[in-house]
Image (cartoon, rainbow, N blue to C red):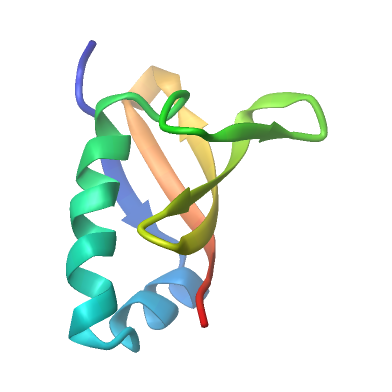
Length: 81
């Protein structure tokens, strides 16, 4: 399977940039793994939409969309404590 490119919507990007290094490093590593297959890694579809998904990556909850036609994952929300 081809690797998907990961992009972040502005609010998700701001949340990612504000993460402490101890959280961000494992999160980025987990996102690299998720980019290999965004339908795996414990992700679940939201409201029955296969390409609208939620997952927990390194303890961080994310919501994202998968665009198969262009091999892109767009993270729209990041929630961590």
